[in-house]
Image (cartoon, rainbow, N blue to C red; front, side, top):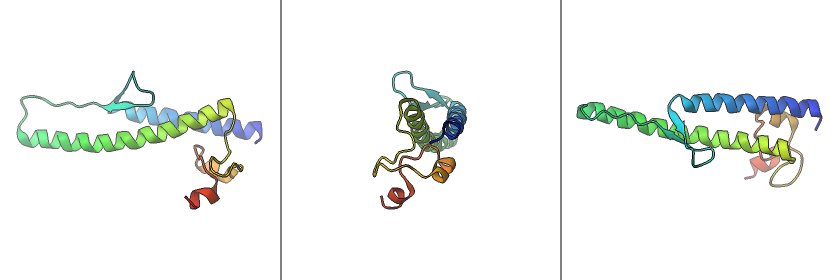
Length: 120
């Protein structure tokens, strides 16, 4: 892969990482003990009525689901950045062939080529 293309993909990954972290920071705190783990901030007042508590729990459940999705995406982005740093980026983890450039441009954290992705 050309250095210029690799550099562009790395920048795209860094921007995605920043966006994901900003979104997570808006409703969660970073876990200092576990890498790439975030914890949803749970704000529950003791003196609220049952309906408000139910609404808070529903919102917490929704944020927990969103947190999980964003954490997984962030983990994939971080893994791709590590592969760029240490080598191996752009190589399919299943068949060992080079991942198509079009796929990496659309989904820079891709681990599989199009063929292997369709057959998983």
